[in-house]
Image 1 (tube, helix red, strand yellow):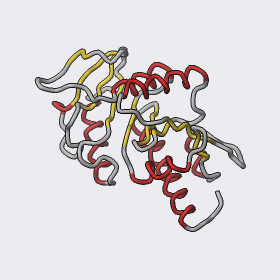
Image 2: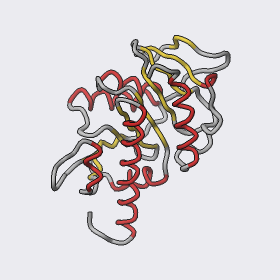
Image 3: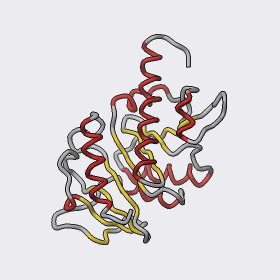
Length: 206
């Protein structure tokens, strides 16, 4: 990422807004610099209209390093900090609020959502012929720091097998080593969510 990552983050936000994943001011995106700091969307900004002035630079502890006047980082900055701290190759994080992701939270059992055994899972780093993959699902809390604490504890115990997590009644978070990888991972998770929702509607076992 030799050019300004804010340009790529704004473009991704417009794309996700058009897909219905970041309506209103929902969701947040970030990209890590070569240092221990990362750019993240400012709080309360419409995602189809972002420009360079809608991003805040924070350090790995979520403290502001650089911010345009009147801008503060997304309230969910702590979730990004947890991923960057635990996943060494994570350089970009996308957190969106899709209908299918929120529906799939209802299908989880004991904090895990069993993903469908689809060919698509290869794109998430699962080459198994008959994969049995569970996506971590965390409870939603008004206090985002509490979600971050529970994610931190889970990641300390074992990192997710695939690059993503789900927060019930909230949204999905996906990450990657660059913008393309993060987008692919998010798209594949959203595909799995759509499949699960439609399979449930058709009473197809998964």
